[in-house]
Length: 466
Ligand code: ARG
Image (cartoon, rainbow, N blue to C red; front, side):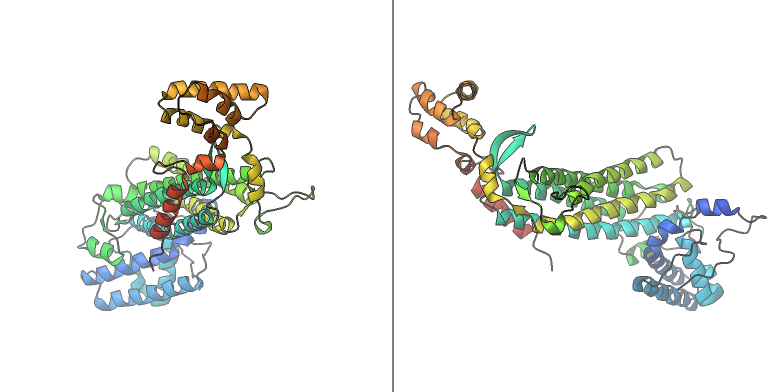
């Protein structure tokens, strides 16, 4: 379906000269906001029905508008809608197309409405949809992570702080850390949705209207939970967009950190995972290379989303009330952040489903027994030694082991029982990373029991609703 737009403006009346084509090109937003087509039409359908119900249009007029708009909506949903580069924006194009379809009665659609409240509504409806879609995608990624955790429940890896070996942890525990982060991301999206889902329609350009409209009926018809309380705020508020994009920024940070972990793990130095051929890329020069480009792109993309958050806030900070055209740029930023987030989550789901853990290689990472130093200190505490004292004593053991090229646990077994009554030298000698993990009992820790429970709990929480 194509629009017939010759005098393609909604505001020609007071102008004596045509707009300079360079201005038209510069001010047009159709290239970006065409994405809002379906939301624009849905909003217009609710608006037209309300105008009819309030007596601002006759029943027949309202029915013609709704009929034409419904056809347009079907065309959009079929993918048969083409943005018209000559249109100023999506609102103009839809109205022009409607007029071509149903004639001059289309001129009544904009009664008691401005593009200012209209575009705010469209963007809110879009953001609401996107928040729901992303929630579903993130839940799928969480499920993939829980499945990977369950599949590798017995794998112990070194845990790091400062990127220095710290204490052994279960690989599953590490993966589940991201499930927690993603759950908070979903919480933020849901929270943002509450404030997104408020109707600005009826605010008019900025002041409301002298015509007897029913804002609440429109909101209800669109499944929105209420109407914006102040018309000036309604047309100039983009907090909801900032909230969505900042939730995505944090999601982007989480995905980026995960990507970074996997990139490290896929190095020969770490050797924790092997990149699946279908999810890796090669080098045009070095025949042996298998590169984690997917993960790097995700890590880099986070910068774009974070930048979007800053861009939106910066756009808003100096704006006087109420609507200003600066706000037209909001959509490009929101769409870019949404696309980046959705594509990153979308590719990470199969990536995680194809994780290939190098179990035999991981064994070598655990050979150094310094990882168990804290366990030895905790063993001393269990025998009544103050933690500071135990820390000092084990620190000396570690130093001595390093100097003499011996294993920490052997030096510990040889020296510590001399000072601590009841300390079992053989038990110290047996300490290894696997045991270290097995000894963890605290809630939320890396103990196998806790991790098993966490997996079961996530499975329950993430069960799809339908
Ligand atoms: N394309 C505009 C936007 O995205 C629509 C609103 C235009 N309103 C106006 N008063 N010029 O913000």
